[in-house]
Image 1 (cartoon, protein in one colour):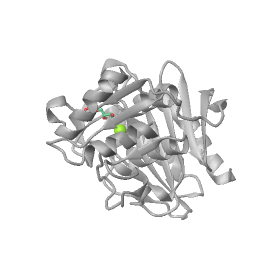
Image 2: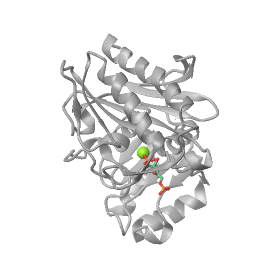
Image 3: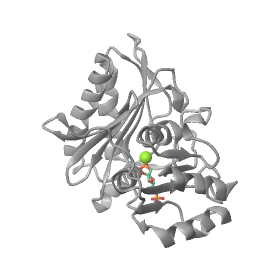
Length: 282
Ligand code: AHM
Ligand code: MG
């Protein structure tokens, strides 16, 4: 791992627990909306500001973009890497005190960039303990974060072969018929685990095997999740762990990036389950 990428991931590992500590007083909604038209919590803006400051302070970071701000912020000093963050994925779970966390994608091209430009991806999960999962140089690693340091707990993490869990977002009447048919099959085979924070649900897939989706909806043909901040980094992690991702017909990593806040249908998990999904939607 290059020193620059190690420093960047260390910064995420050090910043996320500070964000976590600041959450309790920031559970209320303000008057603002993010560029996707979602109401922002005080915590969303706080986490975004903290990551912007810490990441842009690194020489290697040339620009910072996030789900919570309209445009890309560039560093005066330049830098080879362009970081896209979902500062608090699943932040609506703050109200009910459920899982959430931070997603980071490190691209080597200016944003918007496609998933093949990712050189590292990571998420930090605020569960009963704070863990971090990274994908870099063909390997997925799970860490526990304690006292601002990351300690490896699983080297070379791979998606378990026999799938156990599934979690699908959106309301059932809003699912297109072909996805609903696929879901009906999956429901007969696997156990439902849906928590409302993509990284929490994807971490269950990484732990037990299975499939996560926030599909295209009749009311929202591009789904809910955003390609640069959510779809790409998580696809990079799942594919590096031996699984698959899909927008319905191809890997999320092959979806052309056209805008910073572009949405994309997301399907991820064991290869066979994602291939079945693609066949169902074809
Ligand atoms: P957020 O990044 O603003 O929190 O929104 C994304 C989240 C995902 O983590 C999760 O999969 C989805 O929204 C849950 O949406 P819903 O409440 O419709 O189930
Ligand atoms: Mg999110």
